[in-house]
Length: 462
Length: 93
Image (tube, rainbow over all chains, first blue to last red; front, side, top):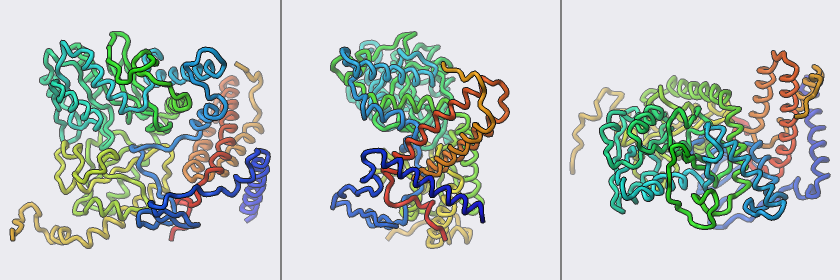
C-alpha cells in the first residue's frame, strides 16, 4: 500500500539520517559494524547471525525478559543522565578544591533529593550505599551493635531476604537472640504474633515491604504503629517496593529503610539507606574510612551510579500510576491466559495484598527444573536469584506451607515497565505448551486423571 | 524558568508527536522501541484536553527535552546493539 511505501521511505531516510549523524561523530566508522569482543573459550558461547548457543542450549534470539525481580533493564532516560559523569564530569564529589569536585557534589546532592522525594523523607536522611544488601547489613548489624548494652533481641520474619537472615544469624553467633516470626499461608505476617514476640530488650524489628519471591505486600503501616507504640526501631527492606507502591516514611513510621537502584530501572551497584533523624536512630558503621556519608558509609560516592539512581527515582515518581495500571492489566492477562488452558495452577501468596508485577505460580504434577529448561525463550526464575545455586526448594515457599512438590515447580514471572502484551501472550503460549508436554509424560498426572488421590498411595519399599 | 509566552501551535505539537514516533522506530532494542511508541501515544492522549496555556507549554517543552534524550539514546543503543535480536522480533511460526 502507499502507506507502507511511504513508511519504508521514511525509515530509509531516517536510517540515512542516522548514519550521517553517526558520521559526524568521530567514531562513526567503527560504529556501524560493531566488532565482537573476544569471547572466553571456556564459555562455549557463540553468537552467529541468527542464533545463540550457550551452555549447550541453542536459541534463535535473545529470550524475552520476565524476571524483573532479579533485576530490571536500565531506562534510557536514566542512562542519559548517567553518561556525562562517565565522560567529562568524572570528578570525585569529595574533592573540594576544583570544578570537577564541585559539579559532582552538586549532582550527588541533587540525586539525594530525588531519592528522598520519592519516599517523603528529607535529603539529610539518605545515605548512599552499594546496594540494598549493604543497607540491610548496616541496619541489622549496625543498629544492634550500637545498642548492644541494653538491647539483645531482634524480631524478623521467615520470609526475609537472605542478607537480612544471614545478618541475623551472624548476630546470633555473637550472642544476640533472634525471633523468626512465621507467616500465614498467604505470606502476610500476623500482627498478634509480632505483638507477643516483643520483649523489653527488643532492639529492632525487620520486615520487608514487598517480598521478592512471592510479591506479597506486608502491612507495614500497622507494624510501624506497633513499633512506635513500643518504642522499637522498625527497619524495612523496600528494595522491591520502591517506585512500585507508594512509600511514605512518615505514614509507615519506619526508622530505617533499604533501597536498591537496579530494581527500579537504575544501575546496578548502588542503593541507599534511609535513616530517620527525628527520633534519631544511631548505627555503627560497617565500612570505616574517611567519614563520607556522615560517617555511616565511608568510601567515595560513585557519582554516575548515584545520579542514575536519583534519575530512576524521579522517573518512578512520575510513572508510578501509569506503570501500575499497565502492569496490573498485564498480570491479569497472564494469569487468565494460563488458567484458561491449564488446570492445577496455584498462585503462591495472597492475591489481594500483592504487587502486580510479581506472579509466582506453581504447576501441579510438573517438575520445576525441567520446566525451566524447556522455557528457553522466556527468561524467568524459580525461587530467587540469590538461592538458585542450591537445589533445595525456596525457604519462602516452605514458610508459606506450600507442599514440597509444588514448591519445586514454582515459576516467578516478573512484569515491568517495558513488558509488552505480545510478550505476555508468547510467554503464556510457551508455558502452556511446556507444561502440557511435561504432564503428558508424567505418570503421576495419568494417575490423577484416573481419579487416584496421590496422597493416599503407599509407595512400595524395595 | 524560561516560559514560552505563547502556547505551541497545533502543527508544532503534531510535529513533536511525529518526531517522537520516528525516533522510537530507530531504537534497536525491541522493548525500548515498543515502550517509546506506547508512552508517546499515551502521554499525548492524556494531555489532549489541557486548557491552561502555561501547562500546555510546560508539557510541550518537557516533550521536546524527552525527544532530545530519545535521539541521543537511540544512537547509543544502536552502537551497542547485540548481534542477535530478541525472540519477539524473529518470525514466529
